[in-house]
Image 1: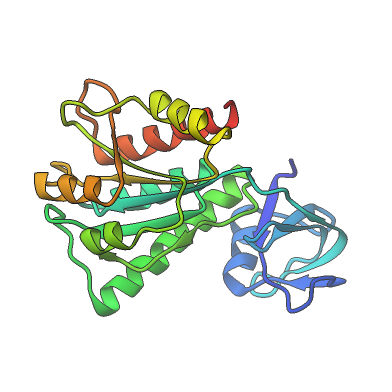
Image 2: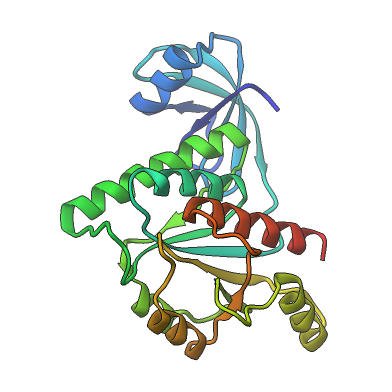
Length: 251
């Protein structure tokens, strides 16, 4: 994979040249030190990539000469992460890891034990920050697809409105939680195929409340164990996405 990647959404599908935004130009030229003649892969976050040559290294408007356009094949499954907001900068790290692991959607949630409450302008700024974190992760790992990050919403409302998924899972420390493999095997035995759209819910510090866990089960979520140890929420999210991605790739 070429060393340089840049995000760009050109006005046409078959551009001869691409002019990068000021932020992308600065990152490519000033931070990554790309020079004229270097190969740069531009991508739109929706699976289209342009293999380019850096024609102009202006730090506020770098120009790429397009050599080839290609369309990346999406993953054969679609994972949505419903993540209750943790304290501090942990959500930034969760968004980065979710992008690296190929999550298609990320839904930040306010649960009963969420200690960070966002509304109005603060919520919009946070969403913008998470989108930037996802973009940085996509450039680093070569993912041509950016996850869709939804606005912050109440966890209960999200649970009640979740529709169109083959499986809805919730990470749980409660007795009786099932293993992921057993739930996937049961789905395959019933449907004759692996699930294509899966929703994972991961709680905040202290986990979801018993009332929220009860509501989740009422709404069709399967409680899934992540093992005998109590994981930090950012570890739980990464672990949950990792094992699910592995099972779906090798199912």
